[in-house]
Image (cartoon, rainbow, N blue to C red; front, side, top):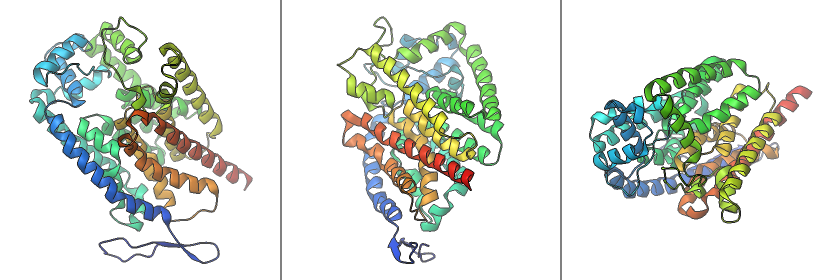
Length: 425
């Protein structure tokens, strides 16, 4: 077990005992503690360079702010009119060459309507405070799942929250990714308490990131977790009804079309000409586009992405036993949703904090002889630093998807191994 000094300001080197009674270093703990200063420094520099531009309107928050303004000023039936979005963003935020299109279900605009009462700069700062509050809520919700991390060093869970770059980037951009993380953290707690219906409802509330929550719901449906699926379905119908009432049927159809058309490069007549850097997506779509763009047409990239995503979901659903622990199923589903998501930018990787944190907590205080356990803990540690590769290989960030796929593979194989072991014994 770790040797520590209560109340010490700095954590000391940790030794664990192997089966022969010999002491050996806990390399996972030492790696995490060694990486923290470097990760903090990089994040500090990122804040210094990004925050001034964000306050001047060059942040993703502009699209959420403009959607709230459109709704509040009585133009909800023009919510997805790109020309109106551009006009409002140019006049109220900043005059950019292109506007950021609002591609969210209409119900989410209701959340940002009150913020549109403030000038953009004040609204951005107010939402930053909201995001920090949501992050604190996530920390509280996951408190019982970080006991082993706290045993190694009391400040370690907080530090891991703060150094995970997608979290920081979501706050800097004024994105809604942390709101989704909060929904998923609450869903995890409900699953651990056997409240599957509530968990499904909470995941359904995250439909503003439809590309992430739909794969989670599909996997739980494949695993025949009916109460979870019922909760998700209830949330879907309610939020869909609210969205149609807010935006109208015509604009809802426009929204559905925009989900697939923006950045796809398939429909040249589409009025939304916003270019998406697909190679910045650490998912299957980004990997296929990064490897084959220029060699095959856009339609074939879309087809390959769809087929690959279906294969991954079927493989995960088939390899993981439905009787596995709810917590294990949820962590695997979250990682799988990242792999198969259609849109996935760096701030969307914030959802990986949940499986990374719980995996590190599970393995940090103990040494396992089996290879899969070692792979699981070190792949989780790698996931913590992998988003920083955007500063090293920005043009090839899609390669990070290979690391995420490896993390998924290890989680699936280890879960499967635990089930087989329990059945034999």
